[in-house]
Length: 183
Image (tube, rainbow, N blue to C red; front, side):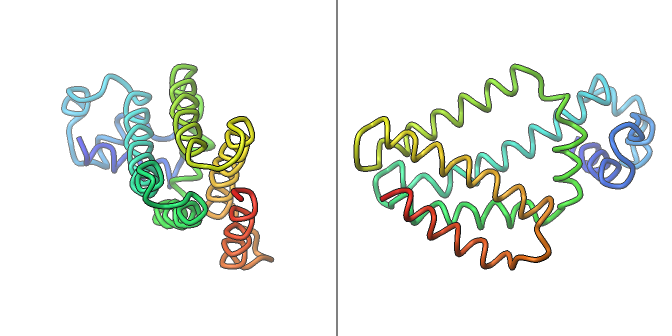
């Protein structure tokens, strides 16, 4: 199954979703089309599995970095710059694949996937907010803001980094901004 997902990822990077047929994926994976259909029902099913695999890796990264925050052993202002760095590192391994998954596979996520992602984000934001000083509403707003900022900056640094700004400077400013927001 992993060979099929890797073949699908390579074809997505090279030729795009519409050219990555089940026959092409099977050929690239070195398996028969019958073997492919033992694991997946369709091309869309393969790419949903690829998205789920990526999402699981990203969530594991987020939880690994934020676990000490949620346990009260580390402040969010220290952890979030590390989280940004880890997300950027994770996505830099295959930036073309990450870009293609975002631009060409969004239609496969569906309403249930978007709702689940939003619910997971809400849970994390709420948990981090509980570790912040100040009124609960303000803490929630701060936590949401830095979560959105982390998500957007990490995506941009991987997908379309500005050529005229040093990524290290972006990360340094991000750290200062997070420290300011989470006071």
